[in-house]
Image (tube, rainbow, N blue to C red; front, side, top):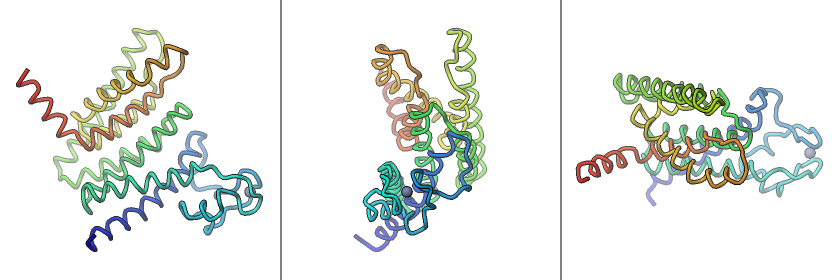
Length: 257
Ligand SMILES: [Zn+2]
């Protein structure tokens, strides 16, 4: 392995672990409207503050064998797992796109989508901080593609918001109940800033497809809420990576058919 690749992997892993650690705090606190900054992390069992030495991503959990240093209460494996997954997403972004702003956009987008998928699956909540924070990041990073890139991102955000808003209004009118949450609408504005308006259409199509395949069998058994944000997140990730390939395949398909 040459030096540059090793450097990219190490750097991406470091940033990924740090962002994974921050994502853990977001997942834990945002659904309950708690501050990300205060109070500092403490053991939920004994209340002891967690010092920086016991807060090193993945490593501390392994060294402490998954237990609190003070009271030995077990610490969820979710923490090191999410840190490791985010680090992997950052490494893959760096390897796939090189050390570019596009790789940074991919890594941040993937991190936010993971956070959304987890909070939506668990609490049926898509925190505004993910959507609005991600929207700001997406618009800012679109400047890497120049003025046109920024306009495309703005248009994508507008289409994402408008399309899901329309679906929500029509759904409510047809089914007389909430078909689409406000969280999904704001989420898709964020997604649009990263993937553009065509990407919004592809994301919603893929999300609906995956959601139908996975969720319809489950809902037939028992009436339950559909965390549609989970499927939109998967659709958005696929769209970011493969949008061009999918759309050109589709165009070929149309011209042959
Ligand atoms: Zn403790």
